[in-house]
Length: 176
Image (cartoon, rainbow, N blue to C red):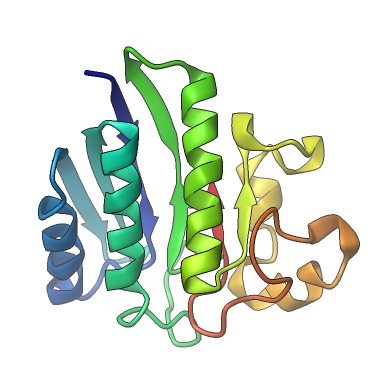
């Protein structure tokens, strides 16, 4: 069976009850194994690590968004790590029986599904990005949630998927 790892970063690290809901949603996804998760209250951020096949991970990530979006409002979120999104970054890593090209295809598929289903602008990064100016995560992050409206008003910063304005409470996401 092919194995892909994903390490989504979520903009919540201070409310354990919210983090537990996110973790429970991922754990309930068939054929996905949650390897680890950790929260950092000072950064107000949690990182989940999970593995599975592409289809199962896509379902887990969509379930993560579905669970996180009603619970995380970036207009009031504060921490040492300023995010661009409620579900901030979602990287896919080839582990066994898959290639980077497979992970790029999965990243694009998940990005489109997130944009369509949740109305969130999504930027592709690293290998998944077709835009050399947006391969580096730090370049995409610059300005964070608060700076997204100005950044997104520029044609160079039209998202790869989704609307050309930030989601009111969830910002934008970066997937790669």
